[in-house]
Length: 211
Image 1 (tube, rainbow, N blue to C red):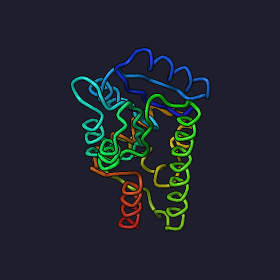
Image 2 (cartoon, one colour; image 1 turned 30 degrees about the vertical axis):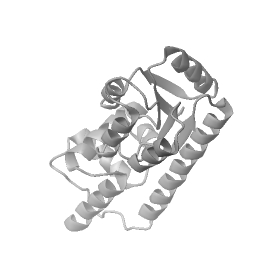
Image 3 (cartoon, one colour; image 1 turned 90 degrees about the horizontal axis):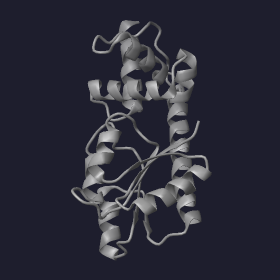
């Protein structure tokens, strides 16, 4: 399954060039001409990583990252700044609002690809560690019930509690990965959970309380 990248910049030529580079490497790329357009896209689907300029009309990159980090749905999405702002203060401000990497234009495509690969690899390792941690806990002895969730959401939540990835859940339930992503996002919003670990602990707790 191709990793999804959201690329945000108000320069059409740069969007075209970087998109072509990333797609050549097998990434699924969507683009936005500004931060507000990006937030609209993020409300319906979550990428694996965001690459954004800083200087953009209406809302700049710093404001965008603050918005992402303030929401339970988006706070863990990795963000890379790709910008012409090369001052030390610019970089410090970027890391303080929560970015994962800072690249300066003009940039080398190989450097951008290496940064993306490193970040996504780290995320995969983190997910594996969480799944292993969850696997050490006793599973529910009965079927967990949560009246806030729809039957479909509850089925997905139970699979999340098993430590499965979205792709594995999609295969298990015979649904698309995008459908699973949307279910997980709605579940986290409904339960006001920050991440899948909190959802998993909640589901395990339900099972234990009912046993």
